[in-house]
Length: 69
Image 1 (cartoon, helix red, strand yellow):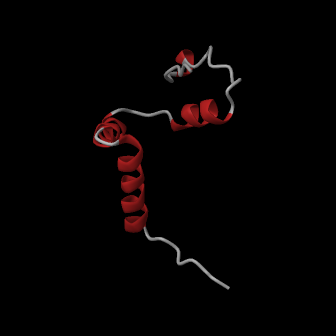
Image 2: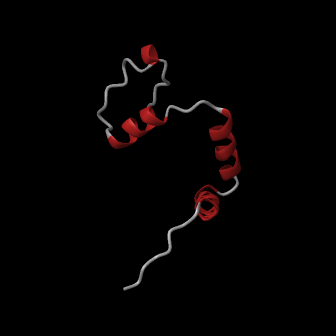
């Protein structure tokens, strides 16, 4: 059997930054800066990403940003 070695945190970060650079080019650094600087509603993003029919009409009243397609 061919078992893959589990990646440590540093390897994960390096591979993720490489993937971002490949996908976004120069915008990758800006994207990482925005993630670091801005408060992010990961639950809202996840819900939006995996459930496009989710109701976000009350998102603002819960203190979350609205996400639009």
